[in-house]
Amino acid sequence: MIAIPHYISPEEYLSIEQRSSIRHEYLRGLVYAMAGGSDNHDRIAFNLLKLIDNHLGDDSDCRFHAGNVKVNYEAEFYYYPDAFVTCDPRDKQDRYIKRHPKLVVEVLSPSTEAFDREGKLNDYAQLESLEEYVLISQAEQRVECRRRDASGIWGLDIYRLGDRVTLTSINLEFPIAELYRGLDDLQAVGITS
Image (cartoon, rainbow, N blue to C red; front, side, top):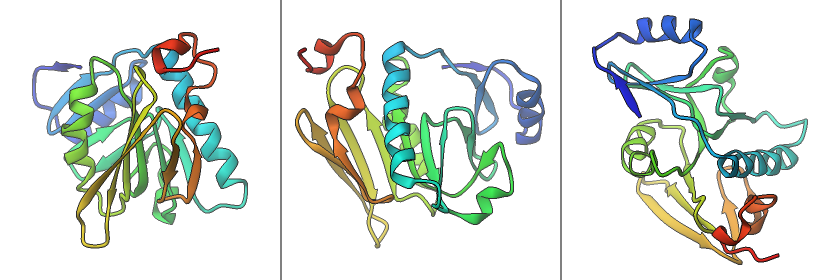
């Protein structure tokens, strides 16, 4: 992530972002251009969104979003998660920004992995609505699921090759291999044909 090196207000950011053909994330006054992703990154995100869509169905009050809708917390940040789910009716008021997700997912990339693990976790944790923060590896079949319990403490469950992933926030369970279906380099994530 490369920052545009001067402070701008959230209002300036939103104005610039509305006119920009390139997506940018906002973090405490700095704006970061988003890097492009790999084909495996896209496929993993697509597979997850397909699982969520099939699970939620047409009658759910919950909505899932891909990497084109922002998640916001006050004047702190505007991020584009790879996937997220919100069930809060307040999130139906703005088509471009959501503030009450219960599940946020990032597919890890080499250039953003460190920030996704620490910085974004700390930022997203400020959202009272957030129940789960999930990181999906591109390098191996590995899903890290951080869950907030009723007392506000974050726990960690790690799923690996052969496991079934459970997303308690939306009551969804599936084999981890479903996330890695259709990848071009299957051996890189532990799948042999």
